[in-house]
Length: 454
Image (cartoon, rainbow, N blue to C red; front, side):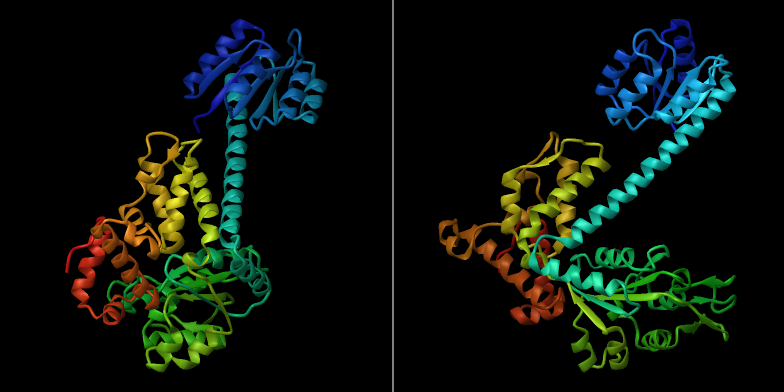
């Protein structure tokens, strides 16, 4: 781990020797000869490790540790103390030091102490990042709208049970994030959370993915393989897009939900697995049951508790908080501290219907964060479809040039039909009285920022 190290010692010769050694090990080094210089450097830069002498003129090492603690300095702190002054090292550990070395320090021993300290630093930063991701996920799903607050109250209650849950919502509304939050709040939180996308895997592989297979079960099965349900033992298995699995697999899944056991592909031995199932879909499963595309008994088995996640257009008060959350996330990922959303950008965002929901909003913010040359995410950085479809209310269309008004009306009409059909383009085309190929052409033009004439 390459680290930024601050060396504090009033002995110039030792300070330079340590600086050369740390640079040889590949670290970035800053030096200070006393406590005051140390506090100045800490105020200007972020350090991973501070190596400080206990005996310096002016501010002592113990006093410096107190100042660093009061300043909230997160760096690992290793103190250097003279032989026979072990009590000072003990006092230093009580005052916030993480480790100590007795002078004169052997470089091999110094390197081991430094590596140990940096390992602690890395683990702490990893834990902090995990905690922040958990907190960010919690902020995303809790939202600020009454509907989401009500949904989270329901999720809190459902998390304490072992009941199978069904999450229903359009693509991109945050079903996986909600499932992870339910798992985190459940008694199974210490167990694994296993994600299975039932539509992204081919029909030939989904059964093996879920239940595993025995050696020789099919061509290419050269060894036994555990399925994702086995991997979820003691935790939660999240079956995304469960409405798209084949009728034969629906039968096998129903047996597992009822008996808690299954057989691997090509196997004859029943395998019991204790995991909770959370299923999700953007389909109208009740309609699929009526049209015999989904087993009625399986539907009622996974539909014990249903949670409907509203689309983003029905909770516009969450657009700004979500956009701010994504801005913070990408500022960290791209190391672009100080990124901020221009108020005009939020105005444009509020006028757009976001047919792709939270996922589309996230992608839009990421695009802006990548493309901006400054610190402000301005409206011109938004995707073309957001700019072209964000415009005026219906009563304002007469104030626009003819082509712009028609383009915006078509945009709302097309996405309104897609919203009503849950994103099913064939049904949307039928609803609009269009050929499927022409609807595809319209959608392609929308993505490129325009709409063709009929």
